[in-house]
Every structure is written in C-alpha cells, then in structure tokens.
Length: 160
Ligand SMILES: [Zn+2]
Image (cartoon, rainbow, N blue to C red; front, side, top):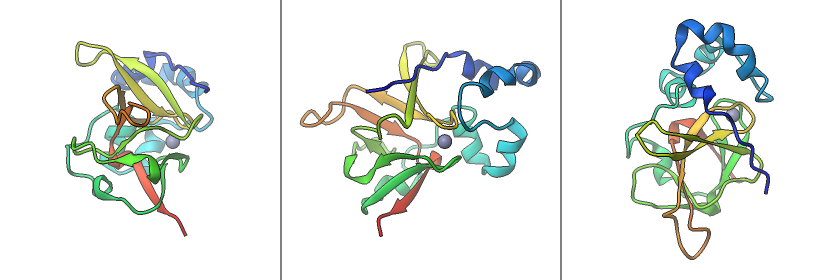
C-alpha cells in the first residue's frame, strides 16, 4: 500500500492569497497535474473550486452522488483520475458520499487540525485537489474506514 504524505503547508498557501503566487512553485512540484489558481478557477465551478482548491466542505445531503448506487467509478472532478469504485460505496447516513476504501495509489493523505483536532485529509494524488477526510467508523465487516467525500469533488462514470 503506497501512501503519499503531503505536507500540510499546502492548505496554508491556499488561504494566504498575497504569498500564494511566490510559493506556488513548491506546491506545483508535489503533483503530476498542477495549475495556477486562475487556471483552476476557469475550469472549475465556484463550488468545485471552493472544495477542491480551498479544502471547503459542501453542505450535507446536497450532492446527487450521495444517492448514486449504479455500477461505475467516481473520478476526480478536476483531473478525471479514478478515485473510488461504486462497489466500495455505502450509505453512512452522514449526507456525504462514503466509501470504505479508495483506489490504491490514486488518493494521497495528509493531516489537518482545522477543527482543533487532527483529521486525516484526502487529496487526489494526481492534482492535489481536496476530496474530504477518512475516519475510523466505517463498516466493521470490511475495512472499518469511512472515506467521507464531497460529492462536488467527484464525477460519476457509469459502467458500460
Ligand atoms: Zn485530481
């Protein structure tokens, strides 16, 4: 299992506009797909930008993907990397699309302390986009993990 640990400095850059330009080069080196804030703003909707690039959280029960149970794959809305499979999705009752595991290697992890305690944050390993967090209260019969993901950060690709 290959986990890429991203330094938390990333989120500081995004919240600090004046210095973001100078430090962008550092962030760029971290992910295979890297774009400037302006480029991302053009490509993403306002809601996608808020979640993926500013580590925001969508309101619970607002994503249509919350109730998406067809067979298929959930891709990164920013760079189209396949991140989660429908067979690993479950209804956590939280109002956010939830999975008991990721597609190995395509999701990167870091930690954040935004709420005063440490959470494991999930990013797209290709573009660094913020996806959500992983918690230890998932289904016990499988992995025990709950990947709590913002639906707006995902695109569902149905199986043909
Ligand atoms: Zn991505």
